Image (cartoon, rainbow, N blue to C red; front, side, top):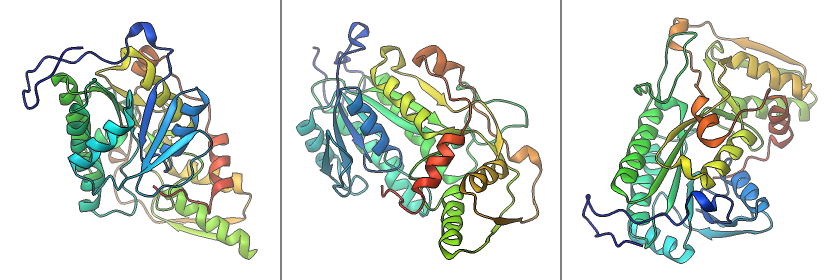
Length: 335
């Protein structure tokens, strides 16, 4: 293993802890945000594959058999604190499933996304071995494109909302750290995720909460929502988890930004109707009138690189994921 000089951007690259020959070996994996919507199922799936898993989260909550939990407020921790935890955990892979957008101010989003990732990179770069860091990015990094076009990884990002800007800064930081040899970086640009534990501030989380409240009250639900004509790339939680597991072990993933979606643009209206159908709650849906042209409301990921590099492909439909979302509605998983 080659030494790396601290502070030298052109220092020699430390060899990775794994190579093309050991893709099937078990790993020590630290999952940041490991008690949350994405982190919890990622932890469980990693354990099922035989990996040693430590969930790192603000509050130590039970994640399930075989998952150790380490309490650390990642948004507030400085580089030295994160370094100390990583040295203690000694991971081969760090998966950043922390961060967020729903219900947060811009300042809070900056802290839990950009600041956290910058500190994580510096901390991981201090470790004796070159650790694989998997950043969960977002389709919102791309912004919007004309109707009927797809978003390949080569598309110049042009985010139209602060969350997308912050996630793009994270992706850029991970790519630069990989280039410098500080980490073995991978970013998965993920579509709009649907599944069990859906955050209550998200569109489908809000809808599920109102449907559940009407069901408990024995009443007909009435949903008054913003225009639902925007078409987005919705992807199932289980598909995202599968992609993360492949990114943790496939040597070819190193250094890539990889889209993870269904490669389809589906309207938010269709997703809300699917949730209503799954819930079987009688519902009146009222949408506000649209205010913008269709060209400003389209996202569809090109997922060809995920198939090529990870051997990953999405599921055929979202009915199962939506059913699981509904079954878990009212039991929101904290981050």
